[in-house]
Amino acid sequence: MRVLFWYCDRFDWTPAIKTLPEVPDAEPAENRDAVVAFVHIEPQDVQDDSTAETKLVKNAKWLARKWEITRVVLHSFTHLGQEKADPAEARALLDRSQKRLQNAGYSVDQTPYGYFLDLAIKAPGHPLARIYKEF
Image (tube, rainbow, N blue to C red; front, side, top):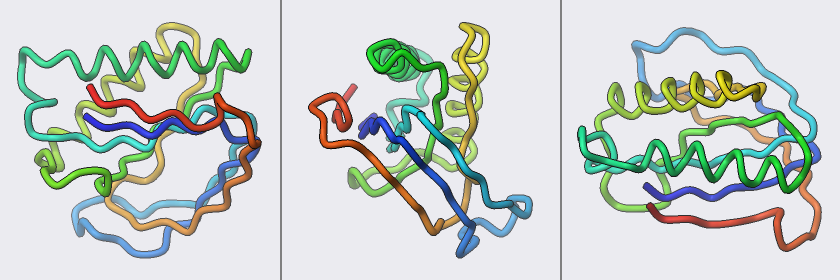
């Protein structure tokens, strides 16, 4: 798994192009003061013995605590590596991660899965505003 974490003052999206025909129609959304995880899920990340999901959750919580916020956005972003997990398995991993974060008291959204999105991002120039991790 490869993740580019951003702290965003603003992270808004509008669905632009549907890439998976089976996904439901999506709506635009606005988010303020959020940790946004651009997540690239690889085939080994969805295997039973993978620790990637746990590391994603722990790192998102760590960064949110650093910024003293409870808002997290999970964004499927399959552009950080060559190999990609099966879309259904990747989506399931993101859904489990969302539930785990919510159970820990975080407010969590996912960007619409299976879409290219128009994004509006406002992020501060701070060392903890952009962090890249490979698990």
